[in-house]
Length: 216
Length: 216
Image (tube, rainbow over all chains, first blue to last red; front, side):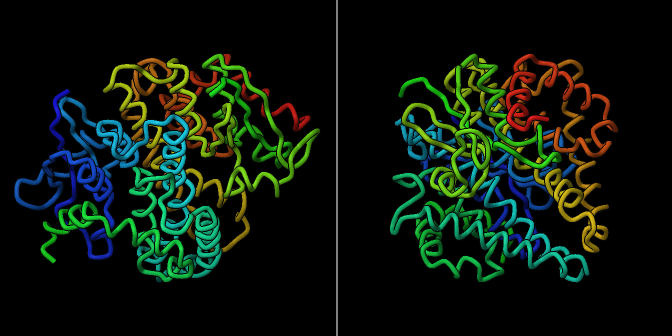
């Protein structure tokens, strides 16, 4: 396959989602890998494709999707893994370290993001509902437990598995979903880890790229 | 690393979880790959290690974990991917097909399992709660939408990406979580897909292995 990458992204999202949409992960991985890419907007925006047309690319209507030469794929975790496999700067060559990066990629999306996204859903979509008020404390406690367990595995000044990797892209973008709370701030070592990831120039370029069409 | 595999599994779980615990995925992958393995029980059972000792292996207290020679790892998705990389019977060698298998692996756990697990949590852990009764219809509708979108991508008599792969292990075990409902039955093509996966001899051996210590 040729080496041209196209990342699909929304042309507009509500303010609560700006800077959190999952194409951020794809842009960040491409920026870290030094792989040139173009962005295709979905919904609104100059040259954007319609949501109806996008459904043929992404069966669940979710952002992101990626084109890489003749390959079209979706799911941010799988896309970041694919990019990491192309470049070797985001995935170690040592077999055990590589397995551990993949372990933390799945842990970020399946163990950490699940309760975090449930909490964000309650706060951002159901904040006025009686059920949300009743259930929120249990979800927040679940998030707090997962963050404490994750923090216990982090070492000061480091990334999840040796050097910065694809796992850190997924984990730190998952942690960003809690920006409307103070839950990360309760864990100083975790907050420092997140800030260490976000201090990377490739992250800044990825975030700037996502925000640009929103004009905010 | 040497080629010995050890899969961690619970020595006992409540009936509603029997046949659904995530070590089923790991056992199934190892059975498909023809890789010999031993099982290490956690909690209760002959020779079981304590939950306290298991916390040093799995920071979130979840089953499964895998030992492969000197490598210890967790997260069922990552473990199934690791096993698939060892054997080549669960992951295509063609680059595009391989990317699509990984896409569906992440889709199974991040797009399909998330609302399914939320519904199962409501039904199995919170069935008497007022908030659960209020919120359940929205979650069920979300599950129904995801199943319809998935079914639209399935072709009669086939697997997710060409031959049976690691993606089918994850997807069909995710669909099993809905066994207390009739939601899969609403989509005959999806039901046939799930049954096609479960008809594999390797699945039967994996399920028998998980159930054996429960003595039921």
